View 1 (spheres, rainbow, N blue to C red):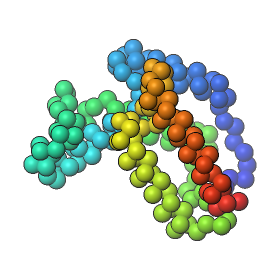
View 2 (cartoon, one colour; view 1 turned 30 degrees about the vertical axis):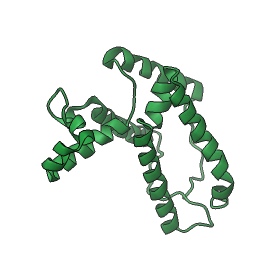
View 3 (cartoon, one colour; view 1 turned 120 degrees about the vertical axis):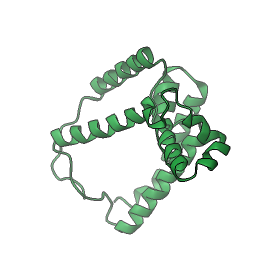
View 4 (cartoon, rainbow, N blue to C red; view 1 turned 135 degrees about the vertical axis):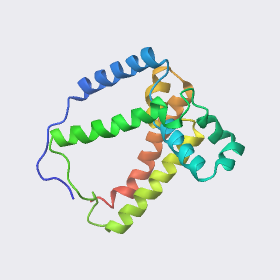
Length: 174
């Protein structure tokens, strides 16, 4: 479902400056940059530990996330960041009257196919974020701001991959 009336968005330059100041504040206050995949991994580690504590103890990735200095993996500030981003995004949509229930799709694709492709794409991005040791927010914002070569290669690859696939995917949206 595509909205018929256009809603006013923030000026991208103002939003970019705001994002830059947010990143700077996070560096100053927390001593590290933004990112979401670490928070999700903390949450997953907590859930796996509830289900099978012996598995998390024997798995170095899970056990590393469970050794939070505050004693609980959900106390990780990245988990709180994700909660804040979710609430902030919802409030932003609510105040700008952009919240609606629906599935965006083109005329040539079914709802089921759209949901399957979205699930596959999200799964691939999550897997890639683990391999790359950071999601797009962590790699692009934090790594890019630190002039990390790997982060720049990651983002160039994301854009190149999107442009390469656009020809095939675009037909579903027309």
